[in-house]
Amino acid sequence: MAAERQARDPGTASLELVFVAPMLLAVLMMIIAFGRFAQTESLVDQAARDGARAATAQNAKAEVGPLVQ
Image (cartoon, rainbow, N blue to C red):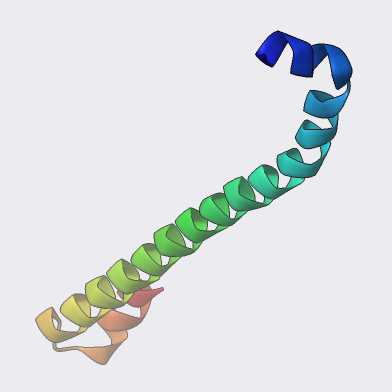
């Protein structure tokens, strides 16, 4: 039965690939974008934490500026 269906519809698989591939590519790109967003958020969070830690550890304001930057 499957062989008869393939013989009658020779271009169906190619057509399905044309419709499905862009959707799969879009999902993959969204996964990558979310991963990059999560990584950037983590880096900013860690930088803020390090800056706050350095500011509380140092009493002189002149010493805190270079550490935060």
